Image (cartoon, rainbow, N blue to C red):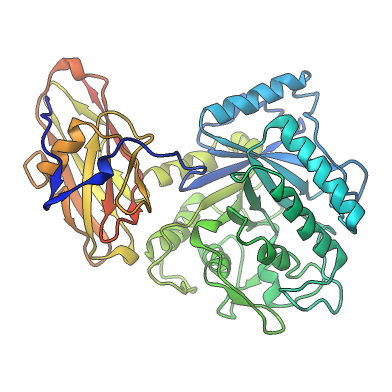
Length: 481
């Protein structure tokens, strides 16, 4: 199929979206985060063995050199990496493949206590050393146990007085100021430390909230652990039980829409791209909270697309949150012992989140039809869309007018033709409007073509206009004989 170069015009507007290139995003639009065990149990995995479906890897853990201290240390487990240089090489290989590698601090067995100014200085210096030694892309805060606990009388979310919390916040602010501006910051609090603040604001209940508040402009995302948790209040004042779709939606919505904490203060919403959910990879990975992927996918359809599963909880924003960040699991190790259920299920889901293709192959000898289902979500109902193709890959992509988003396709002659001939027999319904449910259907009808194109990978993606602020993920079809 020869694709002629044509003038790049669409409804009379020169489309600047087909510019040269753009800077790659620091993080994927949807993250699949997996924690990696720096100990040889239940399986001693090296980083080069991790499933490629995980696009963010959290190294577990940097811990205090002495119990309940602030001097942080990290050494690759010699039972897994007898030669530490091999660990560094594997970190760099993950990064070269486009994945992010973060160092997670603390963990359930190693509380971190930053009690005073001296501890602050020790914490900052030790973390800088870890970051500089191993070249991690960012820091994940996984403080548990006694690391953060509100003293009695510490009731002001915006002006905490508990020394351990105040000093940790100040230490993180100092640390971030000395790291590159693109350093990734995430957190993995337990539900009691966040949503638990709705029922009480003392001790561990709500103890993460002043940290999230003070660093809210620094966090890339927060994935609360939806496991090892009891029933919790949603922002609607009702109680939800773990391991249900309602629980996952209700807990996420506390951060997406904000909630009132005990005592009447209000924790304001985080941006939707700052919120993800944490899940155990299997029943063995956590004491409770494992949820089969099919149930979680119901929750994700509601969170992303506003498509309700008719549960008890009602989203504050009934249209959903298309920028919701994704999922995290404890852990990569447990996932691999569970036949990669987590990484496979959620990679497949995100690969078809906003655009779904009916087949992954098209025949050069006889041609073929590729049905494309567009899913913009209820929040994008009735908006105009433009669907295009590319035969030259997805990165760095094409910036859309206004600079808000980048279409994940590279410009080539297929892109040009799919613009100009949208609505033709080959590019059926490649332009139009989503329906009242935020959906549309299109079709690429490829005629027989030269066998010289066998092996070519075709990608398709769509964007929504006025303004250009939404793009789908790409889908791919490979030309076969």
